Image (cartoon, rainbow, N blue to C red):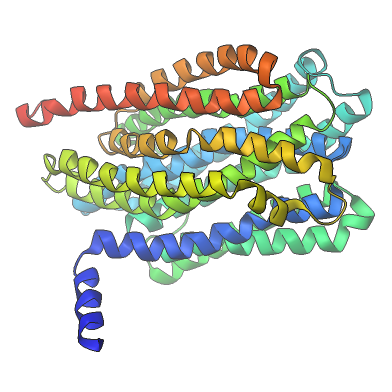
Length: 447
């Protein structure tokens, strides 16, 4: 038995991609798992109220902004850092340039974003005047979170490129612990404002932690630069297309919450709670895998192994389809039990449990295609072609609105979740067709 175990252990360690995926998934599950506890504590401490509707609406806007800027930087920066490392160039100047540009740009955009929200929210939502006032205050309180999310993601992308996966994977747990501690300490005095302050403080400390790790590992000297170069301009172009892509995709949850506000009170919160449950298996299955494959595929691609990318994509998608299918079937079968365990405590309205359960099942119907399309998204990022991702996201945005309008008439809040699942199927086929059409040029040396 011990010899068999030793043999399997040595085989795993001899395959860096598999080993890194397993270990990173484990650490990331821990790191993000702690983070996913936060909404459940919020549910127990605050329940379903007009105040939680306001906070979760603002939190959706924050996720929208974070998805546009922070998530994009974390992934798009990887092939560029891989290319610089393959040429033994100093990555500190490149990273400093990106931090300077992103910091100043986000500061301006956040002010504009809040101003626009004050103009349009009274017309596109049906929140009460008191809830709108609370939303504006929460937007100001959470605004610093966006800048630090972007900077943290830059450092995370660099560490992942250097295959130091553990530190970025664990760091969300630190953020969540600080957030929960802040909420617990100040919830009675500050109410939902304690949640906003908790998220912001947690992200600031997370940034400081990753900056310290980079300094200790001597990866590069963290400093700000203002230097225009061809590489920076190329990055900004790739980044821009992916920003538009994430903006369109990130706009979908906001549209969903806006349309949910047209329904009865509490619908926005129900949609958010079901979405958080849906994100748990999504993060579990992709958090480690997506980070590792992007790093390894980029390293191979920029070290004269371009043709191997197609083989890697095909091998990975076969495994991912099987895993995601098993997980989705299991969760659909036991959805009511899981919802009861997650929410049947504190001041949460028990009558809402069945509604959350139904909405969650509608989300789960799109779990397999959503997980599957992430493989192609990473492939497009490796080859620095994010224009296709932008087009796909815009199509998804239009389809989501159309299906929302149709399905919510018959299934109410569950129809919005079902629309998300249907759109995921369209997105998968669009990306798959275009990926293989584009990568066929690898053999001709035209890519």
